[in-house]
Length: 461
Image (cartoon, rainbow, N blue to C red):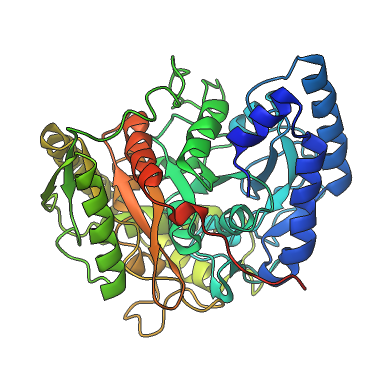
């Protein structure tokens, strides 16, 4: 499967065609999507028309930008002009009007990206797997009977099977990193505000947008495209002054890496921990100064749940709730509706303390490295793995949601496969605003390994 960087270079030289690349992506959707259910909408006619326009621009030497002609999908949580954004819910009227792009989608459109369609999400992206009443469950490229993770599971599966080169997802508690780890792909939750969001999320400042790709280099390239100040987002950061590709290949020699195998409170599947430890050994062999150390915080799950369940209550407050709504979403929304303002402020105080602690941690260590998840993908159709003591998705995602609380950049890269052939992810966390450093560490690891080059062997039907 080609990378976006390879496509763009091929377009520049004339060796590759946006039309051919788009047709390859559409062919992959035709072959695989019936098995994995990654898309809620595919616009083949529109995609091919856009690809022909891109091809003409490349032939004339006037591409719109670095993403011109790259086959792209959009999670069905981000507004996309002319297409419904239904968020996996029956409560949204498909009639629209759909006359505005989310900021990141607008940046992709401006660069000439070819929009293939929109990818699956659970209802209002509320949980760590991807299924909904409207679409059903989304399967994993490595085993369609296993979950893709979520909530950006459709995007991860699409990228993993070549149904488009890159995708835009969202991440409120791990929603790009969870499916990246489960599918053997790459995803970045950037510093909050780096990718503007509009309309604002009901889950508040926990929610980020993020690039989902097969390689770190493509994630950096996509980040270049979708960042940029947008006045519709009150918390949007200024447009970056340099490319995230600059310095990407500078390596890790001399970097101070704090490695925590369990954050001090997580139980990992033994194969997951072994593969992550091996990956950290690769970084050490590349010249990083690795210290095994826990950051020193207790599990902030209760604080996160207060904030997240409150957001769920806000989501459903605008609707008449009935059996068409995900029962898990109904349950946590009821919990969220019972919280007081004092409960919310107490949770916010935990969040601020955690941010301070991590700020001080990064005075000693340039990055923190952890597993992305303590487990591998489990069967589709369930919110939690077999034997889970809790019905909550946050119970099995202890490495991801803490860094939504702190708003730090966090990257997941594939670091191996278990004996049963399921991917495992390595998470790299950097200080706020150090997104380029997060990518640099991930790129150094990928340059020294080949896990990202492995492709699923799913047979076409």
